[in-house]
Length: 109
Image: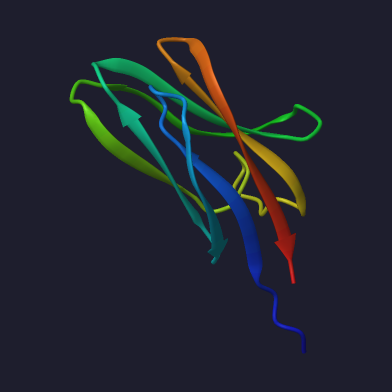
């Protein structure tokens, strides 16, 4: 029997500064996405696929405190179904303004 492993290549970014930091190779069934809030803000983090189709909202909250936050994505859609292999984008919004898009390439082996 072949064991399946999930590989996701991701870019971690700072939401407010919009700077790409270190690329990170994740070998697990979930991925941690980190973002920085420099002032009280509404933050929304969505996942879409390469066809620009909505997959899931990871964060939709107001953050009173500044700091670095993280959210875990278990590679499921909004209906708790595992996603298929492909390219996915994390879209980041602060106070309803688009900030940045990061890429995740998901491959099952």
